[in-house]
Length: 395
Image: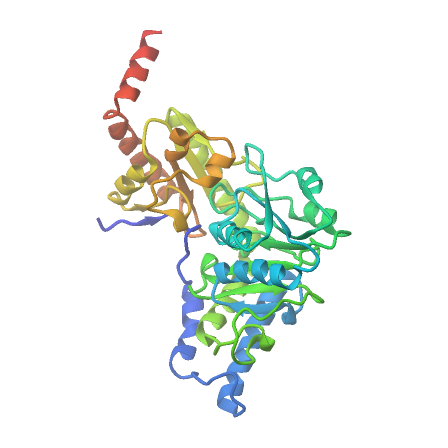
């Protein structure tokens, strides 16, 4: 199979050509350690500052608010565990949601095993958090609220600004996992009253192994990695200059192209959803029609297993997923789809397609046609589907 249509950009994106070319010198010629005091190292210290400035411009914050990490998982862990450790004397209550990425959910479980109490807010059938529900859950001993900016499976964009306003007069810190959102929608932590924000370079055409944590002025986190004085003494270890440089360049490109990309991707997303809903029976769109990431299409198909369909589509040259990349291969239904009220049967039939700026209308048409074929063949091997179809034909 020579043809390949990549529709799993929520899992990871390819490094753009411009980012790749920008990184090359730092992989070979410009290898100096940024902590060195001679010019060869000092030049790379300036490279780190350039990347910090590029990310800060997209966030509309100051460069000193950006701390480099190895990715979204580390950033989430640092935000949650660091806050818990530094504020335990003020309280041991944390609020999050039931649809967070596993980097947040499993970190919360880790903290529960160490004596912290976590409230998991319910969401509505579209995966949206109600700020009033959060307000009712707040307590005097609440030290942290962590709510993702946009969901990685169903694309729901959360009312982060409204939540930030609600928390403005509460001592709890506000963290948002913006891994799926940064570079895809405007993300403005200072306008939104966000204290901590996580992101990952490989989600916006930067390299894997790069990420950052935004920390608002005045917030004191303990060091996450102990050792040298890198990242102002809070994250030890010689910096991965090539990856950080690439992430900074990717952020610059994403910020510049965001408006046009959102419009184009949303139009193609809606076209794909329309074709699926009008041409394929027994399907259900998961997540909202509006207030959704512009590249996200998540649909459940009855009478099939999602992972089976993913494998069959792969044989046709189409890359997609049956849920989060971090839970692929597990014989369990998506926790996100369960939280929005889907039964195990419907949740197991979910497929996620995530587009990018290179996806074409022809790619979508080819994908929908192949999807129709593999669904039809698969369903015809399902006795429940055959019985159901025969009953409908008799009516």
